[in-house]
Length: 492
Ligand code: PHE
Image (tube, rainbow, N blue to C red):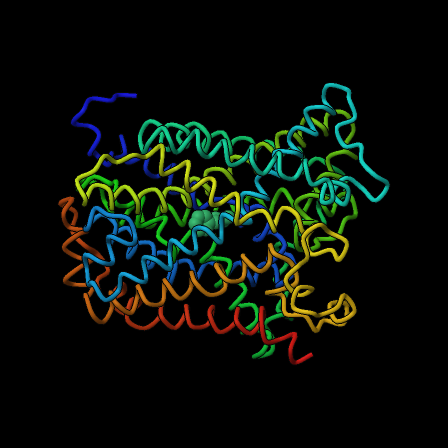
């Protein structure tokens, strides 16, 4: 690392627009694409879901993406500094982002660790050693109670993040993502082609592409699909928590923001659809259900690959390797949102940037908040750490009767729900209202986009979306998720 004394105060910048794009697409493409998207699409109307999803990407995703990139690049600061610089009163929106980063990391790191464990499991299988021996109930049920293993892989995943983020924007994040993201793409392509040749895979494509209008034929059904698609789109694009603001703050003024705000969602959606083309036909070929939750990513997919014979182990390794890349390129953006915040504070005080120290502290904090997620065996009553609903005095019988709100059925869901369900949509809602009504599209977004010498296009569209469509979309997400995650069970 170059350590010239004058460099100590430098925040750093992306080396190229391509490098920035790979990092931003890396942030967007994560577990949400490979795991959330396929089963939501599979269970909520297939092609009809896809159409609604695409409309939301265009009317909400692209718009919020442009808003966040603008705020980041204009101020040259991470979320907290950026909001404070634009209006002191709204600094809290930046802090909300930092809070989201920690709550997201709490479960993202644990899941990333599990993915690594499966990756190594398949390596052992390839080497002819049984990589997945465990107790009778299956490997997944076994490892959830293997606490030392859970912690070991949790830590290992965090260490991977530390190594990358410590390298800085260009030497760490950009360098890793420019190699890893194209690799992910080709590996996914390979898995798709391999799965396509498995007998019975056709059913998966049919389920995916036949427009099933039943889920959206009633008003209630339509709203249900709309809020699921909106929540998914929004999480999948890493919006509403400051990761994209931070990445944007390292972008050169000569880069075209509007073009970038189209490319990132386009790539993210492409990978989500590709993931569905791998996961759903693979499940169909082996007669597995498209079940939700961690079971799909861990249990189902593992069994699919193991039943493909010896070459299947190789494909299984490749699958979990690409999921690992997807996960780590997302979690580094969560860490970077935190690191950028502290670097900005240090620079303001005239101190050294201290990236390494900040990252190590953030890593330890995220490890600690993630411990309950790693140790509650997804909310099992027999686990070392009790799930939130048990701590609150509710019983497993109430859980089975559907009376326990999803927000408290396990620590994973708890952290997922407060970040994805509340903090993030709230952050994006406030941001679009601020841009649309207070800071104004024409005073903030247009001049910043035109810095690069490109003419701003579609002013009417973007302004209308910032003012009306995006806030409305975010309200649907917020209302829908609060209902799903907290209220629904209480009415049962
Ligand atoms: N976009 C990531 C995914 O699809 C999740 C994420 C959200 C990452 C917010 C960073 C910030 O899994």
